[in-house]
Amino acid sequence: MTVRTRFAPSPTGFLHIGGARTALFNLLHARRHGGTFLLRIEDTDKARSTPEAVQQIMDSLAWLGLTPDEPPVFQSTREARHAEVAHQLLAQGKAYRAYETPEELVAMRERAMAEKRPPRYDGSWRDRQPGPEHEGKPFAIRIKAPQGGETVVEDLVQGTVRVANAELDDMIILRSDGTPTYLHAVVVDDHDMAITHVIRGDDHLTNTFRQCMVFDAMGWHRPRFAHVPLIHGADGAKLSKRHGAVGVLEFRDQGLLPEAVCNSLLRLGWGHGDEEIIARERAEKIFDIADVGRAASRLDHAKMLHVNGIWLRQSTPERLLPEVLARLRAMGVEPGADALARLEMLLPALQERAKTVHDIADGALFAMADGAPEPDAKSAALLTPDARARLADLAEFLSTAPWERKDLEVWLRDYSDVKAIKLKEVAQPLRVALTGSTMSPPIDLTLAVLGREEALARIRAAAAQPT
Image: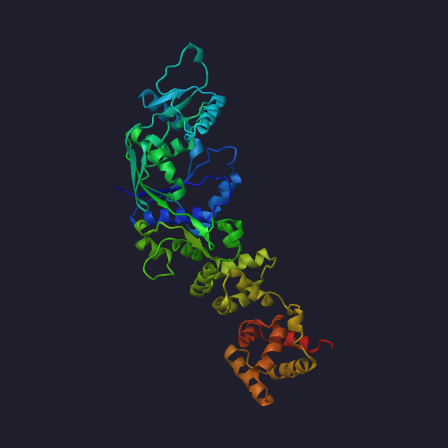
């Protein structure tokens, strides 16, 4: 058996972080078993599905590197097939026509609730035959639910799950307007796509018993089910906007790497010993759906930032450069050739202390154009008259220095020794002169990156500022 998994989002909004984890688990399960990972867009809710949401889902999956192995299937294009199966069940006597009006269905629910019964369909058309008065009238097709015993699902995460069939009603599989219901369409699509494993959130668990009715009535082999617990916020409450970012592309916009986001999602509810930092290639070899826990996971943004920092430090400058450039361009900065060369020199140092791509971009801003950025009030306060005099003196001292990082470090130390002052008394005003801030990469690197002419011009400009 070739393993085939699918991720099946509804395009009614952004791709939620929980959906991204579901897609990741489906991809990893397929890769672990040498199988195929598919994408199905469940866009049958025409009132709420939008092209923008479809594109957002595609962009989110592409950013995370969760690329399906075949072109996506759009559920809305398969309505004729869904109707075909419904009519096949009708012809086999496993489904029936139901002629209730919407008003009659409302009255049925209200009556059940008044009698303190579950508001389920009462099967009033299950054994009735339409009369001449029903000729040409609209009807829904309902499947005949099993009336005795129970439905049992051997779930790969939840274990053995069962429900008494008496709790299941004869659900609609084809509406009176000829459109399929979600629970019916999903089964037909999973069968036709030869899906072997359905991995999804445990909020779909109750749907599974109803979907099994269609699989069983058609004589189709059920896929294996794995219902993964939902993701909660750090406080244990259902994940929502108040917990911070919950849409996939929000994490991108906050400067996180897709590798770090996937790593964090992987560790939400699944683990492999003490391993915390797990690359995709490694995950594809060790992921086992059976190791997913049954308890809800908690998304901790602080921990995700920590993981992102680790991935930043482990990444090559070549890997990070496009991410940083994208951030700079979003800030309205388009580096020229000289600025790009400076950025490439700065990257190894900046990535060591950064938690996000934004930190790197912000740390490189001082080198993206000639002239130091305007210092804030706190930084400007360091440019005292004594400090400016020292900067003027330092500029003359460095004017004959070899302009290599290793040499500049020695010359700065020599200057502090000759002047009998602490190095930090030189370095902090110098940082402000060069970068407009008290925070920067190592001062010798900063000098080397700017180059002799630009660095000395900035130092002299700071020294010449009026009191």
